Image 1 (cartoon, helix red, strand yellow):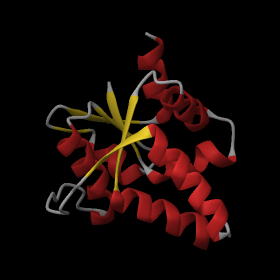
Image 2 (cartoon, rainbow, N blue to C red):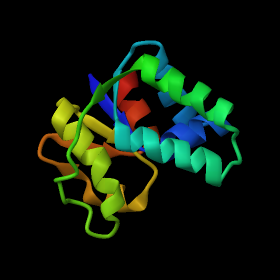
Image 3 (cartoon, one colour):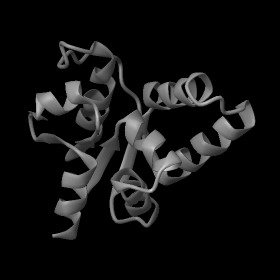
Image 4 (tube, helix red, strand yellow):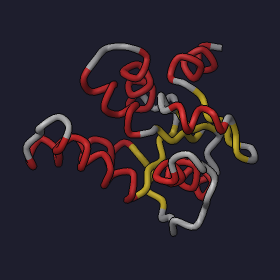
Length: 133
């Protein structure tokens, strides 16, 4: 099953041990196929630097782990779905291009979309419940 994580899932999973952390563990364990795009990785880099003060070396370590455990797809920034926050379109477009079944997010703008085509947009807790069975 292919899945796209919103930046807040990566950040929360790195910083705390809640549901986003367990989502990251599921991807690292190969229970799901994580998919990213360059705009997602760029946002992750910016967020780690500006909001959390990570050094360049720390950022590249985190991004390196994500890159090693994820498939990278190319997006063009053409999809326009999240009217309340167009910056979030990259997550849905990445899922669309990759044929992913889920976007996992804690962002209210993304969660309010609910779905796009066959892609479901769900919280970390809902995603974990679905994985459990």
